[in-house]
Image (cartoon, rainbow, N blue to C red):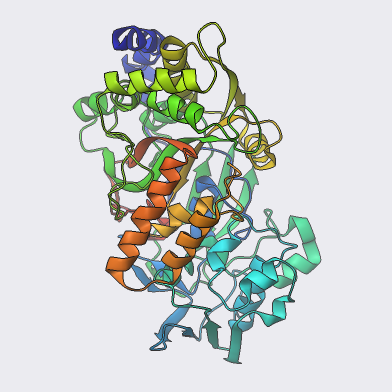
Length: 532
């Protein structure tokens, strides 16, 4: 059976092999200025409002435009950002930050602790509807503010003077400092929000506090950042401009990189790594990455609502090694559980051989009330991407060959896709991925709590919610590890999702670009880059 699936996939990938052929136009001389850093950036950013962002492509740009109380160095280690120093009380409940004296917005206006208080309040204000607001839940009264039961002024924030900010937490939180380097905790310029409302984050209006400021934004073409001379560390910034290019097609990005248009790519096309290592040695940058690619079930409506057997059958019928070895072939690993390697967990899905998995899948499919004479008909939504399409086609072929399932594949533009998932009104199965917001298992596990804004499955379990609540409050490493394993195993036993593969960070980088390092969150700030 595997040979039939492999053959099907090979036919689908024939066109990809053509990209290995020499293309004379790709050897053109690079004409870009050496003071400009050109970056491929996957999809069009959904927003440049840091409190409303939730996608990776927006995050890449926002980390250049803004800076939180703390930031990251090239290796991902937390370092002082807008705050030059801080202290944490012995009980882990009170964080005191001392801001730099020279802080300024990109328009030259002074930035103070009041700006951070305004911004944290805005991020948790229910009117903002920030999709990542849950990250700030440890702050005193945050839940009550998010639900509208308390005004934002009741948040656990205090400002003894214009350069001092105190944040009070409800309980000790091991990863809280990491959250403060996330876009949800970035400061936003209040004056622009008042004057320009919805246009506050557009070119000509956006005022930021990072190493760069927004100069131009041509949707679906490019986004130009200009060096911010008002930033306290401006002297150590090398490039004058950073240009981000949103490109859905990894093959198009690859071709433009070879033509000399880009210094850095967002990704590497499937099945290219071997060819690249042979023909472009030293230009592939591959490193571990805390991310999992998965399919989510809509548990709020048929056919997957209250049908654990059916959901498990679909998961068992997928040969993940075909996806990682034949479709992707860039170092990705088959997903045996939810948490990626590097995060503590011993939970596993069924680890039997593929033949045994397929036998179990057929039995569960029958128990769920389906057969080849009475096949499941379902839909699978995915956002526009050659890679997503290739994976969807391959998995749909596995389901059809192994179980007789008939799948309608629905390809959607990113914003439409996100809205469809969120509404849960039409989806049955959907493509998704989760990249850690911070380096801790809770970043993955909290996604499926009942009230999480990004829980597009509709999963709701009091037992699971209780476990996550305990994980977030437990400081003892051994006890916390046990709770993490229990929570992940419950998620897998309830068949909420289908983990498919674990990501690796993969980019193409011109040999003369220096200053970047591997880091588990794949955060690469342009301020650290330079041309050698």
